[in-house]
Image 1 (cartoon, rainbow, N blue to C red):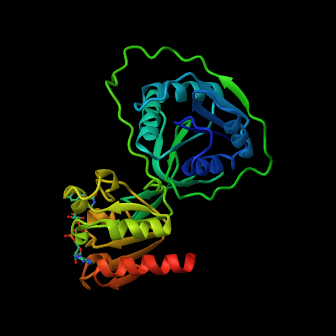
Image 2: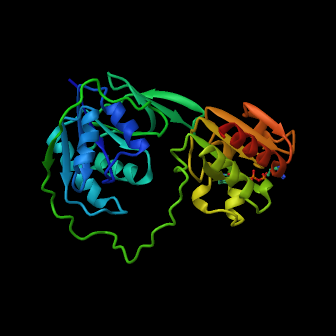
Amino acid sequence: MTTALVFLTETAENLGKAQRELMSLGARFEQTLVAVPGDASESLRAELGRYGVATVYTAAVDPEIFAQPLVELLDAAIAAGQPELVLTGNDPLSREAAARVAVRREAGIVTDATDVSADLLISKDELAGSYGAQVKVASQPALVALKPNSVDDAPAEAASTPEVVSLPLAEVDAPQVRVLGAEPKPVSTRPALNEARVVVAGGRGVNGDFSPVEDLADALGAAVGASRAATDAGWISHDAQVGQTGVTVSPQLYISAGISGAIQQKAGMQTSKVIVAVNKDADAPVFEIADLGIVGDLAKVLPQAAEEIRRRQA
Ligand SMILES: Cc1cc2nc3c(=O)[nH]c(=O)nc-3n(C[C@H](O)[C@H](O)[C@H](O)COP(=O)(O)OP(=O)(O)OC[C@H]3O[C@@H](n4cnc5c(N)ncnc54)[C@H](O)[C@@H]3O)c2cc1C
């Protein structure tokens, strides 16, 4: 019998898309456990029950932006549940907490995973998605960070009523980082870049005006991405940068506008299912990986696309 422990780093009333994917993968194993900071609310427990979760481990851990308290929670949940497999998100906080637990337990960790088979064979992307690899972790538990958009959301065949176990955590003494102040980010109604099913990205070709990119993104319910040239120019926040030194995305559709397609940009988006490129230079390298290429001025092409999409939605 294989036990999978799903590690959620955020306490929320409802599961987000990436968390539902983690739960769907966890639900494929004979026993599914969850570790989550804070109180597992009634609605969260009900949602976890849809994935057949047997036990939810909780601990009074302050919502934190640093991994240290989460390391204690995950470590204690592994000690209590003895899973063969630990599934975490592929975001920086989840990966940091999982990596630190892996070091503590001398266990193997695999990031950028896209699937885990019943016999714990892990599929993962290598070299920014240029290659796929299948790996096995020799130690126990195997810690696996799952890339968003890798698994379909599929609840368990039989729902459950999870038991909630509150873990007494050892005091996290002498915190290595102290938060001196925090400022909430302005809330965007667009989906998160790394989870979005559709991304519209702009590059130097937007020439300082991201509005055609943003407008098309809003018509499609998409996230907005950018090349480094655009973020370095200060036309859009650095959070939007896609590529080797930015966010890695793997959406169903990636629309690249005014981006030449340098190797460092490709590294962050070439595993997208469908790539549409708009560039006024027919020889731009981005056309080498595009499924559909439009040679033209983005300031003309993008508004036409947005208008047509809205007309069809009406
Ligand atoms: C260590 C390192 C890490 C890097 N990491 C990243 C990274 O994470 N992400 C990243 O993106 N880059 C990264 N870069 C930078 C990368 O090498 C490129 O310089 C960058 O991607 C270029 O951005 P761009 O395509 O927007 O600009 P350009 O290369 O200048 O291309 C602009 C394109 O827009 C087209 N264009 C211009 N006007 C229009 C118009 N009106 N309509 C349509 N098309 C138009 C042009 O034909 C051209 O192809 C990194 C570089 C290094 C050295």
